[in-house]
Length: 217
Ligand SMILES: N[C@@H](CCC(=O)N[C@@H](CS)C(=O)NCC(=O)O)C(=O)O
Image (cartoon, rainbow, N blue to C red; front, side, top):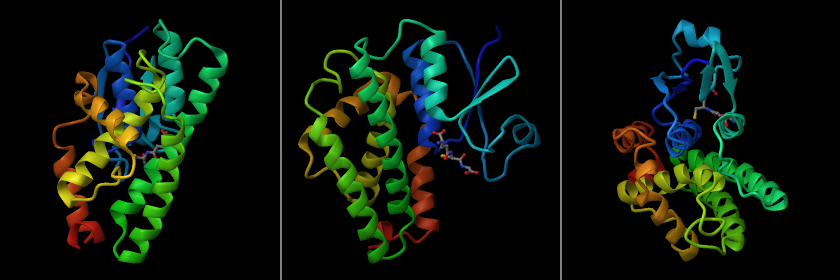
């Protein structure tokens, strides 16, 4: 079996999940960055959906970040999921929930006026509320063991931290539990290695170029 190749986009939170899991499991992998809005011909040919991330294994394109995660977890034991079946099932449901949070973050970034921003803020508040309610354990979501759900949430922590630094927007003000969890995620070495150093600059350029409400207000 060949070395897996992750095809990523520097600002993509879903691709960051794959990269983080590969690093957590210390898997030897190749990394290729593309821009899915201007894809090279080889990527258009490889990817059925045109989206990143794609994990290429032996010429096969595995797509959808949650499926990539499950493939890597099964292919490279031990599993990073909790062993209890019910906990595992609820964790997977919360992984899906975190995926929706990325849509709200995107809406916040692209909002050009107060109305659009407020509407996205209401959505993310509702989503963070739900997560905060079930976040009881420390240091990680399930307690002592770092798990798939921590991986799924780490790119949220990174992006909210950048929005706070660049725009002074603290979306975690009302959520001390989530805030403490995200601080621990930000401090973790593998999380820091899971995204490119230019991410903050790229998101800032996006906010500036888009004349985003949170950047200009
Ligand atoms: N559900 C997908 C979402 C992936 C996704 O939306 N990727 C974005 C970049 S962050 C993309 O490739 N967009 C290009 C497009 O939609 O054509 C996953 O979890 O992998």
